[in-house]
Length: 268
Image 1 (cartoon, rainbow, N blue to C red):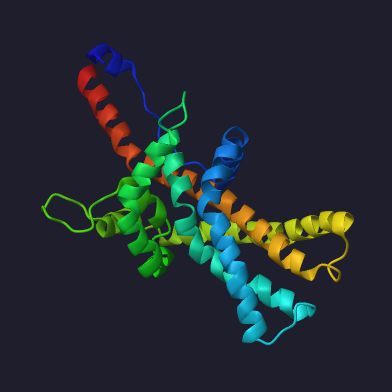
Image 2 (image 1 turned 180 degrees about the vertical axis):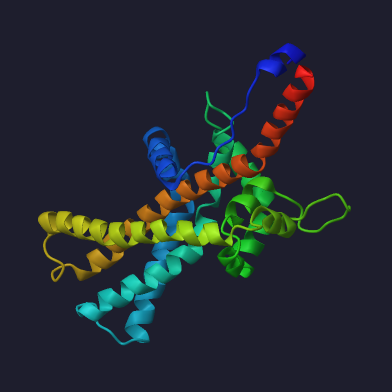
């Protein structure tokens, strides 16, 4: 780019609202829905089966509830709602890698081998931060994206290198209020949508196989996990776009300032 082009060029950095991010999330699902489902399901399917076995065993042997009791289904739902958010950062890691590579490849989709290789490179820190240091996500909500995509070193071997933990601190500095504010619409979204989807899915199953009282295990093992994980898949994509939005707002702002300063210098 020569000086004349630079003088006429403009970069607009703006922060997108929650509504705009929701619209963008729906657009991403329209174009990438099958790929999103594929990458999200790789870890989801085995974990969902494991969750069902563990939760059912806990309810039957520790809470001493029978599958025909209404309290059984209530306990099942509450335990799943507890486990699923804990597992989501790891379950969504392959999907985050795919979305991160896809956004820079507008014409072609990244190859599966490329996604797996990039994921394997981040695996040691991914295990550390999503299993042993997961409570940090309460303070640093973009922890999964930063660990998986940015792949900063765990330890600082040189003074000018930024570690993953330092990057988390820098990226989330002065953002507690925003995190709290954006949590409200997401919470309301989940509170409204999860019961609605459970009722809709339950009604469809009722038309196909019968009422809940006839097939209680089917409803526990199918309806609740499908609905909860579907909501989480949507929120993972939304959260990824919010992470990109924050990077554009914070780090792209420096690009705009450079262009403004350069235009001013050329006009002088």
